[in-house]
Amino acid sequence: MSEVIQGAGDSVDRREWLARCFWSIITLVGLGLAAPLVGYFLGPLLRRRETLRVRLGAVSDFQANQPQKVEFVLRQRDGWVTEEGRHAAWVVKRSTDDVLVFDPRCTHLGCAYHWQVKENRFLCPCHDGLYDIDGRVIGGPPPRPLDVYPATIEGGELFVVPLAQRRS
Ligand code: FES
Image (cartoon, rainbow, N blue to C red; front, side, top):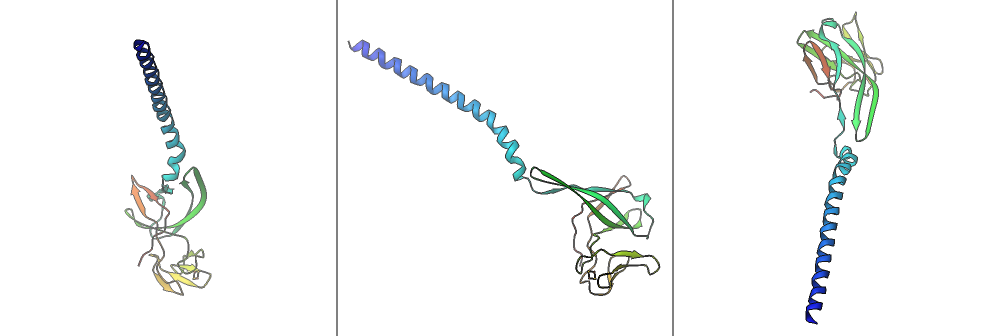
């Protein structure tokens, strides 16, 4: 009599053990399959807003000491969204390895300025702000020089990251 009871207990334990093994394996397989999916869907949320650098052209295409306005498409990735927008910059080539790239907004109230060839200066028409070719304030209300975009020259090509940086 006692053998039968003991046998039944072993059978229940074995069945319970097998069930635990089965569910453990199912859980591990499920986690293994879910992890990449969770990473795929939530990964972009953890990434910082990314601004891609932009190629503005060959340095040799710019005339020395003749500021030139360049328009370009800026692509920004934020989470799952990639936005494209038209932007501009003023390029001032001083020499083949010395190029300044200005944010096209006046540092007073953000108006668009332009280059005056005869006067050899930038003029902001909103409040008559004036800047020299290096972006230094030479007249009007602008509180600081023109902001610049970080620029690099690689293989003769000019690249910028269009995030304006203040100069003192
Ligand atoms: S916005 Fe340019 S001078 Fe005021």
